[in-house]
Length: 125
Length: 106
Image (cartoon, each protein chain N blue to C red):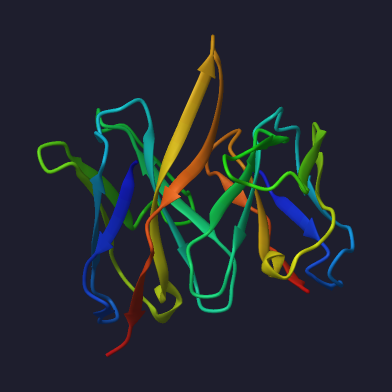
């Protein structure tokens, strides 16, 4: 079955750039699914950051769009997140997930499954 | 953007009870409503997708219902392992959004 694993630095400096990678195993990143980043600040709820398709098409949360880039590397079966101009408010657990899509004609439904285990990112000097 | 509002934000119940968690969308989201649960220190896991479809291996005591903008997660015959935080999520249009969560204490 498909498994996802986040990797990247756990501590980044304010005004710097967060760079995380999500490795996909047990399946191809070129399948008919989107690949998603979600974050969760300490003690708070879930925030959808954005998603990418293997073609490189992306959708971003407008609240983060000016600072976010999500990219895909099909040769390595992984996708990545970059978030710049960091502040303490970006401190969170960052999860990657597959957005599993099922379409019947032009009507599609989707849900996030599976998720990676999450990686803690702290923004601090 | 679509706003998702869950209620209650927390609740306590006993083993064997039945509980209901509500989720309201700020506009119609068709059947694009999912439910997740999250235990402390763990990633969320999908329980129910497309309003009422149980993910594989999810016990039948979980039931999802609703339509349009109003949705409900019902857990009958509560078990100790159901203690978790529950989130609804709309996958109708980006940015996909989550409810603020409901913390269930058994």
